[in-house]
Structure formats: C-alpha cells, structure tokens
Length: 259
Image 1 (cartoon, rainbow, N blue to C red):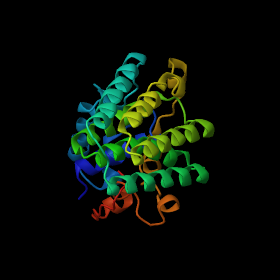
Image 2: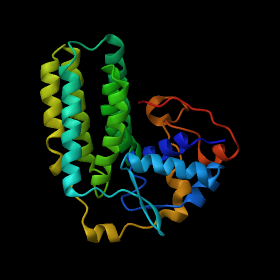
Image 3: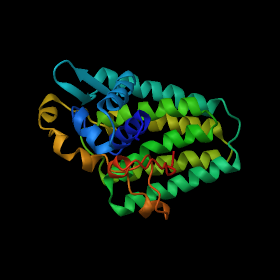
Image 4: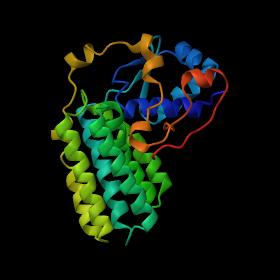
C-alpha cells in the first residue's frame, strides 16, 4: 500500500514541476482513490505538508496548495541564501564524486531546456540546489532546501521564460566551474548573486491571477504523474514514487531520482 511519505513526495514533486499551482485544492477522496489507500493515510501526508508550510487547510473547505505572500517570499529566499552560502563556506573542497554528480545534473538541465518540457525544466533547476547540498554532505539541510525550493517555486505566477531558465542554468554552470577549480569562496559569491535577484526572476502572483487558477480536482491524476526523466537521463527511471495507477495496484517500487 502507498505510504503517506510517498504521497507527500509526489505532491512536492508536482509543486517543483509547477504542475500544482498556488491555491490548487487537493481532494482527500480523490487522492485516496488515485493512490489506492485510505483517506487517513492521505490526511497524514497532507498534514505533514502543512507542517512544512506547503499545504494549508480550511475548515469545511479542504486542503489547498500554499500561496506565499511577498513577505514570505522574501523570508524564504533569505533562508535559502543563508543555508546555501553557509554550506559552501563550511567546506574546503568538493570531492570528485560530488563534482561528477553535479556535472551530470547540469547535463540533465541542458537536455530539459532543449526538450521544451517546462515542468521537467522547473524541477531540475530547483533540484540542482538540493543536489548541491547533498554533494556537500548535509542530507538534513538538503531536505530543508527541498521544501524551501518548493515554496519559492510557488512564488512564481507562471513558468520561467526560456531565456530566464537558460540564464539560471548558466549560473548553475558557473557555480560548478568554481567548485571544480577549488574556489569555494567564488562559488559562494556566485550563489549569493544567483539567489539575490529572486524579485526580478520570480514576479509575485496577485489576487487577480490567483482567482484565475483552475480548481484541479478533475486533473489530479494528470498532475501527480511521475516526471518523465528518460529524455534527460537516458534511462527509464522517473524521480519520486510510483504513479497513482501503480500505487493503486499495490506496487511501491522507488526508482532513483536526481536529488
């Protein structure tokens, strides 16, 4: 049977891929049907996401994807800046295995950019920061960054433009180049600059835009499908957990993900 962790991970993945937008309603019953589990397990998953500030509940109305305010956006990016620059400052050098993994991640980002898959592109551009934290040897902060990255993803009203996404990938490449050169101080400076322009890169959603977000009750099955990584990794594995259809049949294989 699908676990609450698998459900929360799938919802988080869909947020990172910008399939689930701020204010989107999540139906306990539909999620239970999609994942072949009880509403109790779904409620546990949504409660976990609520504690992580990614989902909010409204008495008598249900569960909704969070819609961060301008103040929350500023605080979230500041938290990311402190964590990510601090991680780089605390290390003297990144080992060869970590550098190899980051180079592979950059290749995936570039393939996603060429593919035109904006959801996969969004996921990978955000996941780079989680991957870097893992390569720097701090799994706890990597998990924290995954939540913070999801929150910052919710701040954008729509997908990045192709030019913005390409620019973000180029900035990631510059950070990796500095790490390869053993210059973590420069990598830290590049990261601070990369995260310091969030208000330009990610315009805030206003109330008018929020009102136009469709209720995805009839499309949960579509938005919660696993990301298709075959075009960027050369394998058939998808990140995250089984698809809702697979979960409903009781199969809970966990293919590897780029994080």
